[in-house]
Image (cartoon, rainbow, N blue to C red; front, side):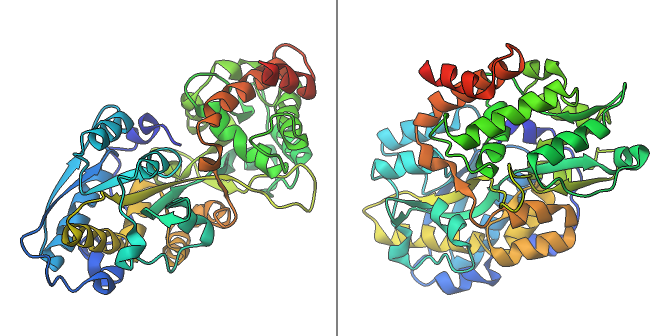
Length: 412
């Protein structure tokens, strides 16, 4: 999951891409199918969102207010600050959940669904049509649809086109881990790192960006001793040994991207928020992740954001909230959020339109189908992610082999 402080840094960016007319067209597709508004007059709903930067929070307020007008609903759209997960859990405990809440699909949605405090959206004919199966499943818990996914995050390699040109290197995606080591080494100079990656423990950045390498090596994130895990840790070791990745990377976290945006590194890994970062002063492109062996398919971890509806004894209230969520999830709203906010739309049609507007998004969109749902790890991830950080540091700093480092880290 992307740290919100990473996204907050694009808060001052100007809106780009689509006209403002799209912002208010939220109910033009799926919302019309959800309800014609009959029976919803007089219903007042509260909506929570915790993504507190603009233009995102302003867009969400406008989407919901526009949809509410069409459906005859009155809404109070609130942006929550602080520890959002704790706020949700406290509200659930006191039976004061908002009628609609934006939920992360890796932790917040399954936690609330397991407590029985979310409504089954399928009971109100909320449709996941147009979503890839992988994306639709993000909103499910134990086979029931508790959230409608409206946006997702995954990861890709970003590269500086000017650095490639200066080094006389073709802009060809590295197919294998060995190719990436060779490529990053060829881009390394006295004033420029070939690649920059986070390696610190504690802030969550290192395991998030490491997971796509592990998955693309065929590894099972739940098994830190798998061959894929060994191959991924060994990749970091090879990059450091080749001098393409500084051994100082173990001191870098989310802010490691600054070295790439400043032009002092040629390649990095990051999320879709950088697609809308107009402060980047050079032309860049994106690559999909390489795999351990040639001919294999890359795979990434996928995080979703879904709107859930609070379970209520008032079925009219639930129905109104479900209709409002489906209206908010229109293709126009998803596309505009992507272009201005730096997310990948959940709808396949909106993903295609996003790539047409922002070609560098293609690597992200292509990776969505078949991506790994990190919610499968549950609370086990809290332990596993530290083991992977310890193994990466053991292999790159302490001189252990990747296999030794993983065995030691997993032994605790």
